Image 1 (tube, rainbow, N blue to C red):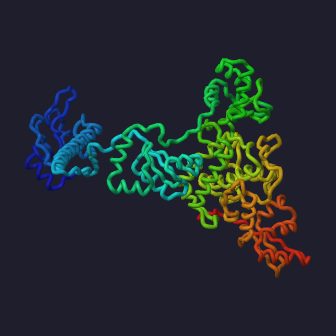
Image 2 (image 1 turned 90 degrees about the vertical axis):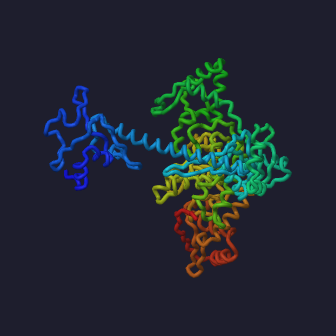
Image 3 (image 1 turned 120 degrees about the vertical axis):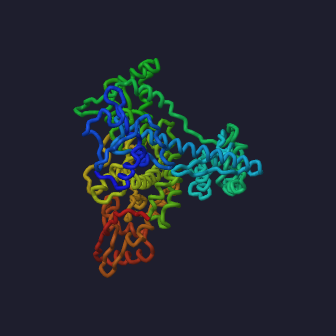
Length: 616
């Protein structure tokens, strides 16, 4: 390989410094295999000498001093050559040397810079200026200097009362998060029982109301005043520097279920195995006798008491019979823990483990669900409630609370609900689940995807799985077959049949929403006025352009497709027209009355259903 002319000239004139000027290291010595270092040329054959354009490379003796590279110039070894200088120069050693030298230079620069900053800050302090430089930048490195006293640990607690869909409450929440401050938020819409506490502490129900420990600070206006006046940090250190007293606003946690710890301990002692029962392969189960023995050992009790404890575990839905044949019995009956049920992976309100909190009342859970979802509609639905902003919902605080709330449904007892409470609960839950399904798995694009959306997106409620289809057809429609399906949602003996309505209220079809443009507007119902709210929903639906149309010239009535799909609920076509009359405006009612009164035939046409997502 030929060297450039300048390089050849340099080496010809001064062979002792040529390599150094090019940034290289000393190549003049090598080991001869016996640990003795030879000078250049000694111990080499003629063929081993390096010749470049007829000039022999004569390197300086190893004992001669090596000239230092000019400032700012990185030696050839630091630039990682392809061929290392000697057998002892490994790639790892060369790279390590390079980074050690770089780190030393950076450390030296930082030390000098901080020393100068210390002098600057001391000078400023002496001059009465407590500021000083807090941040500076080096090449590829950012250093932030915190003054003494900043970042002091706060021992107290920040808490504030809020409401859903409250702009000021959201601003307080964002500010506290932006400052990385831990806080407790008490939403009086989600926890209506805390509104009394809010009134007692503040003398009113206005929100937000911020507390530092037990001391009331005020609302958003006061917070902004303290921040803008530079007094907030001092106020926080003054009050929050001490431990929070017991009488300060605090979160209230639901006590753990008394059986939860028993289930955890016993679950490690019973042999959970795959077994064959009634010619069927059953996974992850144990026998009643095995559970009884584990309970006897744990409680040191008799067999009768152990059986009663097993029945209590079953009533609280910690365990189930594998085929739902009995509650709990001793002997060769097989059971499994709730988390081992085969449908659990499809249940989107189950996150890794059974909710071990004491179950809340179904009425309280239903009320909280309605409050949260109503707040979501206020913020993320169009004025006519026919379009939703799903991205906004998925990122909202309300939706986070909703996801946490539905975990309470795992072992809730729905049999305590009245008829209207149960109707409102399942209508509201069905509509909320549809929102959750769109966010988690997406809306179905075709006929095949709809099965996954409606039949396989599930919640576990009261120990049993419920899909959108099973809520609609199994519960609300009294276990009737869905359109184009030959079997009923619940088989005989299914525990969920206890909750199914014995008589179908045809108005439910105008309260059920399924995230499509063809469905009625989304609503969440109040149990006390649910019948009137359903009638209002039906009137609203039939007054839409795609709800119903009457053509006198063609003697035709155009009805929505859901009337045909669920004709078993609405009755015969002529009866349907008379029933619809109660929910039409004066104009459409007059036209339909004219067609019905003259005794002529009427052509009923069903509109195509719009399955597209109703996103805004």
